[in-house]
Image 1 (cartoon, one colour):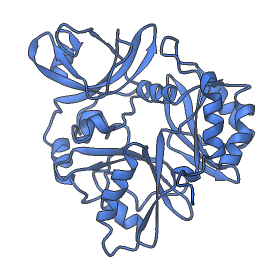
Image 2: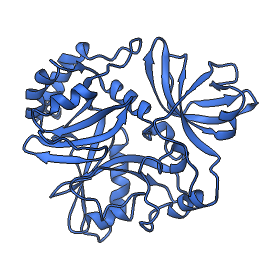
Image 3: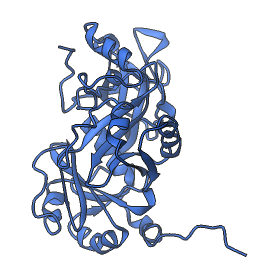
Length: 344
């Protein structure tokens, strides 16, 4: 009789052995320089003659002009313009890759597959075929030179060689961040070398660095809650307003061109150790109804959590904002690494 249990990968086994050594303590500060296994992220591969044109007509960013040296953010919307998922997207000589939370990956892949129809495009889950490492800090950039002598010079640049794919993503706390997408064998060989120079951290540290960078991620509790502009997605390069139609495009464009936006996402600290995405926030000026929602949150040390919070801008400009109810802990608004500008 065949054992139905799938074989466990050497990388999964290794991470379980390393679990107690990974810096993931919410009561301590985020390390300045760290490396983290990003096992919570999934990968969808698109191949075929029509892969680029198919995907171009489904998501918020340009796929047809995506080159081999670039990485892009993109969103996948409902016909009402509400985000179902946010992606990190890149391509190589053989495929286009979408990265998103692994909890969303099966359903999003299935939904995209429904619209392939006669297009020559094939979608595949390659999450188990690659290992993703997140590296942050100036020391991380130096450590990577052993495998990538030429690092991407700017955020959202990419380089490939025999060691894998190196993506530079948005800086966080003034320092560079990278994702190394590679084989299981390469990751196992590189880990002990990297952790001599960098703090070994858990995926929570990477998610926290995303929050400090002002880069949102749609998760299950926040699906269909936000038009891209409500989470600043066009400000960080996730929306192309010249690329043509995709589901929800008319509503996203209308939100952009009707004048001043009334809702945005802000960075905040709150004196609460565990804050859930999808939690509502309330203004002291109007305590009877929520004025916003937590997009992402992670423990940030000293009993606090760092959050990206979608909010009415009027509420952020007057009174105080509280988690859960007007009697809940107050949000301390922080400065984002980019300016909240109005549509031009």
